[in-house]
Image (tube, rainbow, N blue to C red):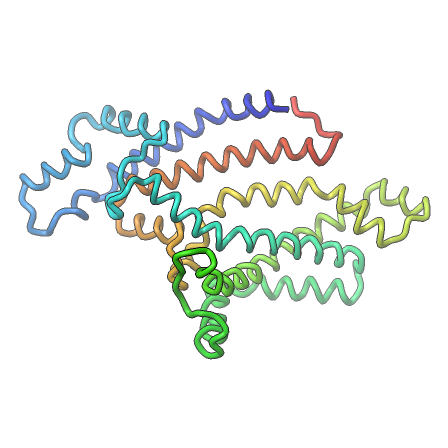
Length: 311
């Protein structure tokens, strides 16, 4: 199993290098980094000094290969806007984003699987149609509408939650992240419910389900025990593929609720075109995590389903 994982990881290395080479080139060569860090009245000498400081002198290929070599070693340098090592900035911001997105993913996955099982249990009946109609309505509403309406009604008008902000510790931050987590769960529920219902309904047509019914196993046991165990492959796939993107957070929630996560930090760096090291560092982390969790997904297949053989 682990030899398979190692071979897969080695196979992804050229892809990782190609992605980081592209991001490095675009970030440094196609963003007006120097113009963003010098005044509008800066003279040629100040421009030249700033270019030298940022390593934007000399041959384009050579200087980008040097930057790429540092990036591959996870040496991202110092953030140009935060004046701190990029690694330190990423650590702080990632923890904030995870405190927002990880609870939402776990809760929405558990609820989605449960609703999918209920829909399969009552398939074709009024309750099943009600669940799917509710899911469709939830999917039809924009994420931004959820944010504006819930922030206005629950935070501003009813004062059940803080309108925006974030604490210095996790305990202090809990009241600030509760409403964003609720919003993210509600937004995810529509998509998750329909996906897991489709999984459960398809699973309910398998031969082992017919065999279980023929042996006299109750419907409740068939659906909530046998079916759930065999439906773990698509559940694992959806869950683990979502994990890398959790580290980026939900930038809309972070922006509207003034949460200092990695998503809002990266958006500010991209729109301002002022911080290539931070952009490159965040991309490298996301790319690495995506590869790791993609391999881990395959490994988890073999853990949950003995029929899967990794070769």
